[in-house]
Image (cartoon, rainbow, N blue to C red; front, top):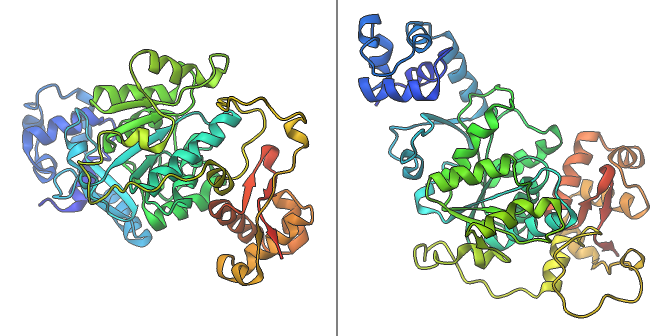
Length: 410
């Protein structure tokens, strides 16, 4: 097998796009042969543009050596398209990533019931309720969740799956060591701890707008199907759906109100024949027998328990399906009943930082700055405690960067 530094050299040539890398590999067979090829050899590669030829004539290895050293330092694994455990699901694509950088666990995707959940970065209250519910249910059934890690539907679905004890994978549009957005840096750590952060871009690469559409083909490519929770009719989410259709993956969509802007995309997909999804079991339909060692028919969870674990829904959500009339008092005047955590359970469930932060929240502090001032705990530890409290279902983030406790302490 080719030495890793040749793979890194091959995929980091300036002016050389994905198609040119694949053409060169198809013609020469290995990255070493591309490296040692001379101009007259490279000119024989069908369809190789002049800028790619110039890129392959640059034989300097300093950049690839630096990337390899950085990966060793960070504990980042490198997977190439010729590795035995490279996902066959990706290898079948027209433009598979030639190199993948992995921070976390090396997952055998072809053996996993993996599904993508994608959607808007600014979802409605309805989407904020649905995404973590679907993530939680997929985790409870043993499925693997694949998503990005952007604010909104991506991170909500990931947190739901983490709360359900499942494994998760985030595919990135930059280096696995470059959190984006910065507010999700602790979620990066949680994903890597139980699953994997994956990118075709080397460590240190900034997340760029042009990288996201390219990244999306990997999300759908690793998955058996993709679920659109909320999105506009024309959006980045729909680009991922287009990739899924081209890759012959299942396409599912969460139905929503015809008056809701963020349901225009999913509702249009349903008109085109996408599978309607209202639960995790809807997503897994048809896959139970294919993955008997992975998927489990978990007992149905009472809706009230589900809502309690995920936190109370944000006000103003859509998709209410209960036939009975609304309560006589406005929803905003009702205070949700919060479970009380005993002293014994507190010590088992929370760290010292989490307990101090929870007490401060119960006393009225509701922003990160206020919590730092009230607790005198460093900001990084406060933010970490807030992340884990949200994963645990003991707190939630609301509008304007405010946090609220979902439990009481004895």
